[in-house]
Amino acid sequence: MFVTDIRKEFYDVVVNQRVALFVSPDIDALCACKVLQALFHCDQVQYTLVPVAGWQDLGTAFMEHKEQYQYFVLINCGANVDLLETLQPEEDSVFFICDTHRPVDVVNVYNDTQIKLLIKQDDDLGVPSYDDIFRDDEEDEEGDGDDSGNESDGSAEPSGKRRRYDEALYLFYFQAALVMFELAWVMSKDTKDMLWWSVIGVTDQWVHDKIPHMKYVTDIATLQRHVSRHNHRNEDEENSLSIDCMRITFEYDLRLVLYQHWSLYESICNSCYTSCSFKLWSINGQKKLQEFLADMGLPLKQVRQKFNSMDMSIKENLREVIEESANKFSMKDIRVQTFAVNFGFKNRFLASDVVHAAAALLENVEKDEMPTDNFIKALDCLSRSNLERLHLGIDLAKKKLKAIQQTVASCICTNLILSQGPFLYCHLLEGTPDVKLFSKPLALTLLCKYLLKFSCVCVFCFIRSFFGRAFEKAAESTSSRTLHDHFDTSGKSLQHSIMGCDHTHISTRQPVEGRADQSFCNVCLL
Image (tube, rainbow, N blue to C red; front, side, top):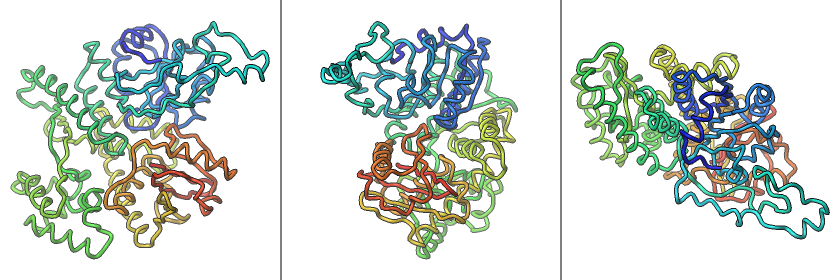
């Protein structure tokens, strides 16, 4: 069931209990986790944090903790399956689910005892009525004989009725971090750190194309009001910057990835928006880039050195100069609404900088470390006390973006992007440089985003499509060996041998990109 009063029906329930916190490895979930951890520390709530990368991890984690805990909080996992059927918990176990994945399983929506959905319930959710979902099935009752069962427990699916739909097929976008911040705000316990984490969570959804642009603009406006409130509340004590102070500002900044921590030239070459606009994989694209730099009137020496080392006279008007030249080259959307944070005098980061850094740490493949270790490092980099780790994440993000750019250029130049009728298909062969990196969901998602924008002048993917369901049906019809272990249904793993098979079994209008990795490959369906 939907929780309408998150403080009364969620926080007041768990505040005096021991809680198991299961968190999916994505940036929005990390930010929501940080906010909730801060609240738990404030009220001395005992909890255990367990990263869960997929359904198998979630099942294992639940089995290990079900004897010690009655209350479970699931962040960005658990909403889009019948959770009680999946985990088979005891009747006294209660699950609080804050999950951005769609669609929400209808059984979770109508279970009013064990499943609590931490989702803001709007009037336009489009949830079908109970009678539209369940109905008496007299034929099944007659065929099953004594299949009547007990209807006294409202938490279970009513006996003698069947599911008319497997899921409530509706789209409702929100961010887990923003939900947790609003909980802190309602309780008057919100801090600037919590606000910054919610900003990062919202920005993550935009960076990885998980929400429509208009939803991003709406959330930015909501956060801007909170930022103004915090800055006004603390302006007396922050009239002069101190080394430990934190200040969040709303800005119109450039759609150039990590440009304040890179050289301007490298940022332009590795940003999806500019590299796609120029078509930098071609000779003509490289010429266009040189024309663009000449139009700005910036010396190449300045453009190719680190941003921090550029002349102050150039940096002062850099955004205006770039925007003016970008308009001449049909890049009218070079600016984007975002937030920046200043830690004292020296450290300044855009929200997207932190998203890329945390994602790079979360999916670091340079060292053979356990996923849990990477999870903790990514979580730590969100704290202002761990700026060294954040800078390490930024360095990893640069390598990741270069690898994506090089892979996209290689795929286009060697014609690896194939049209399979209703969708696009890209197969990265074994031995491809950086192929290990693209076995990770966030890196694969960014690669797909770049491929789509490079191969199609406009992006025609639909956010949160139902391609995952179509892929499952295709796997069934072809008796293919697949693994559906991702919380996001648009991500599948399949046996390497079927990557070269006929793909016409998939009937949908959505594009797809995939990759091969040893015996199994991950496929991102957008």
